[in-house]
Image (cartoon, rainbow over all chains, first blue to last red; front, top):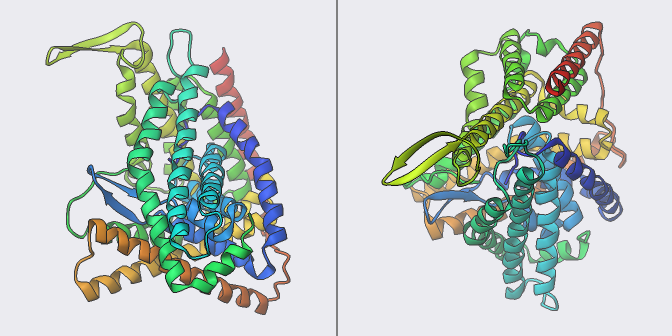
Length: 230
Length: 282
């Protein structure tokens, strides 16, 4: 889902970069207000955690591998605004130092993975788990559903961003100037593979991690839920 | 997010260990940034701004030949910066441009991009037609992606990573964000080592990493375990920061110095970018 340089037009990159400015500003403000001074390094280490999650590759039925993105998991653990910053930090480091995701596409990548993914996932998790006791099975299931929905929503956004390129930016003879696949191909492909394969994987991993944390750190789990910056 | 699934039984452990080794190498090595080459001698701020200008220019260019000029300039800059051509080509072409080359192939055909026929052939009685707009669009996309990746890799290879992250300040990124990025970067090495140790411990006790369903469970457990360590490490980091005088307000050391050659380089790049855009519009 990391969009490289060259796939999106400068206009699209600019629009998503500008769209993310108020999100980052609000995230900084909310996190500064809600995160205690001693939790500032927690954010940095949490971003490193987000980066590391993406290293866990697993075989998936069908002959491919996938990795968890962890955006919804971090939103559940730290709150969606803190997750927005943590995932943004991980994406910036990946783009600048590891060449994973484009530098000009940072705005679009952050929109998909640091905004749409954690917020969609977190609020669906809250909705499904509403009224359940902290650490209950319903919260585990809610975390899985949230992760699935968050990832699929982010993938659909990426598909729309790709699909709009040939519609908006092409030459007179129909030559695509950026991503060549229209909405009729890009959206079903991006959404389909995440709805059918990667979303389930993200859901299972997120639910298992939440289950493990509930079992091993019930105190921290409850504290995390009361101290989240949602 | 997808890779070809290797069916060897220790796939999970091998893929995680190799990812951890790559992160460790990338975060620790910075070998090329220490060479006495041309790009290494430039101020990181001047380099970051000019490379961003080049990336934006490449994004605006619609002629593959002009993008090819930028790519050739990347090869010359790599040579002037003492980066071996073989290493640079492997680093830039694997994985993104080759992946792009793979995914644009269907877009060359008439069923995705209609237009004047350039070439046609039959496979099992089915007619495949490569169209002119499809082919030109594919060439343009691959050229743009290759040039962009080359620019990004050059910037990352020839600049010390800590300096590159500090440069974010000149783009108006808030200090607290830059502090978080630089701190996060420092802990990547630690986490990569942590992940390696976890899987070495599992292999030393079990022999082989469990696969499929059990493998997913082990991976989930280890992500959770990494999170537990995260919370402990962050507390230790906070105490270490307190002992060094942290009061809640982040401060970053700047230490950059702009010289005449940086200004000349920046001017030359901006003039070149303007020239490319002029040729594009002519």
